[in-house]
Image (cartoon, rainbow, N blue to C red; front, top):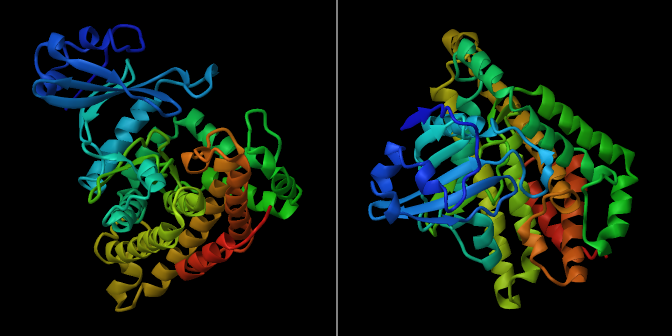
Length: 421
């Protein structure tokens, strides 16, 4: 895998220009073929920020991802730095080392052109689409629970050399503009009439109630303070069912361009929130005879993700606690158990995860970037009834954190039975 600093000024790729622009990238040619005339290029980017191309040749396929100098969802009225590709590249290399096989292989990185050439995942598709279709993924909760635990633990002062951790924190601290998106969209915009907000019109009574609750807004802002001040580990930063690709038996994580040093429970909480939105949206996607079984499976995935995270964190605590935090010299080396300290930290992580889960359940319905789980429901009155449950769940979680997975799942079932509109 090579990295370059192309001397030419940045220029966005197109289907037509990509072959001639990338003709000299040996790692691309080695995987698709040496003759660019034999390449087929398809633009498939459907996200909010970037260009994404599939390049197919006689030798195989790769993905070429290039950052744009603005938010694609909005246009050039919302500029963004190209350096986010730099942060994505560095996050992917660290995730690959900490949980091998869970992210795409990187073949080439060009910092000046803000592009990454990476593994084409096939026959993987975006997890959110599979959940909308009612498809199941074997081992989904285990894979993502392991990913969250391994990247959280190994990217923190629990495991890293202190100097390396501080240097890495400094490197990712430059990801200012993408953090700003999170700080505004996730933690703040839901709770007032922000300019880019939009929501299902029939939700207005529920929205008015949320925004009239000072305690709720204070809880959301406390979670923002945890996000901005809790530089505990390298987070994926945007881990949801749209940044996971799956077959029926295999799971990969993509798109860590929001990577930043933040709280240990951030990724776990955001992921669980997206499971719950899939759960609450299901009555609009499933037939009556399929609904209960599929919703039960989604809650099983939620439970497995959480319990796997806990079990893997416990394992890593015993085997890879080599950093400056909670050193064995204070416990094991003196013939004492550190289990109490470990469990207290895990409770802190879970409490944070629930807070982040609560704000995510709000922002994906009330701010700029919505979830297809709800947005693909054409009947807005039916959509609003299901979204209202998600909003209510988020409010309850923020104000009274479920203390364990059983309580979270019981709350989800109770909320799913409510008629709020």
